[in-house]
Image 1 (cartoon, protein in one colour):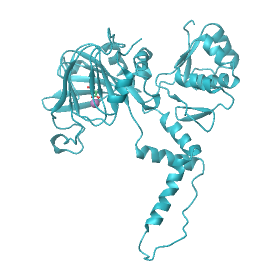
Image 2 (tube, helix red, strand yellow; image 1 turned 45 degrees about the vertical axis):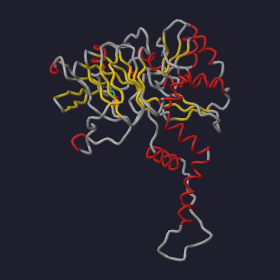
Image 3 (cartoon, protein in one colour; image 1 turned 90 degrees about the vertical axis):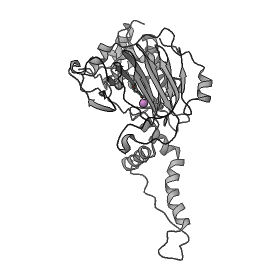
Image 4 (tube, helix red, strand yellow; image 1 turned 180 degrees about the vertical axis):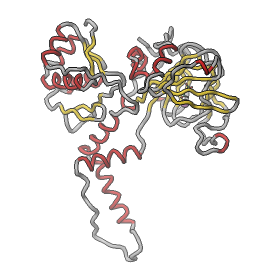
Length: 379
Ligand code: SIN
Ligand code: CO
């Protein structure tokens, strides 16, 4: 278990989404949840997103995974970065749990990096919030002010920015955490062989929202209403202010109707950017198999990274899971809350859930879809 040594209320008030902060000793007695060898093994898998960044003088070369071996990279000046480790490596979930004081819908993934001395991805700006947790080894981090940054070498396509004046310059050691909100340039430089963990958060852009709204309207054959007016402008070549506002209000009407926007948000925010480790069994379970498994002490777990979300004041009783709606009209809200908050259930809690026929059918469906799995842990 990982317990964050942090005044969360104060952090949320003073830093979250506002300004960077170094939290020295955030995890006293931190232990790496994964070893460098295990991480290197994950980066050999086709489904897992990984990259190696090689630092040469003032140049950074990126090589996309999967990787077969690492011999050619040598002892220094490179870094391996593996995305969504929480999807593939269940032992990393306890570290993610330490950050669930923030809502699951914002959470993007746990990225793990293995860096050799002088390795680093270079100075850059992210459009997401990130907590960087230092495991084994030491890395020096600089963070600049949240001001417009020049792209490196004047190249507008470069992911890197020019060197910046640091407002933070710190060496992170085991158990230290650096929080960086979107927009602050930062750069990590590796001092000794290091493992570090980035817990990243994202919010949807207007583009993503608009595209989800369009999908919703098309899928449900909605949004056929057209603009009508009571007055017309005197000049034929003009789109009057009244008409501009009237047409745009067709869009804002959608945004004010919870029966529309709740579906859009539930589906959009429960999706994952990285592939999930779907664990479909060869044969489908039936309700009796499930009951037997629980009676013999099995529990039930979500696969890593799966988002199970509930909307406050939802117009319907349902859960949004991985971009889909699961209707549960007869399930008490407290049970929906358990399902959305807890990533695993021991056998007793699973049996209690199954007293609700609808929830039993849901668990069965999710297990057969490979989104939940039975765990052998004795309760
Ligand atoms: C790194 O670990 O070097 C990359 C993390 C980041 O800058 O967001
Ligand atoms: Co970054």
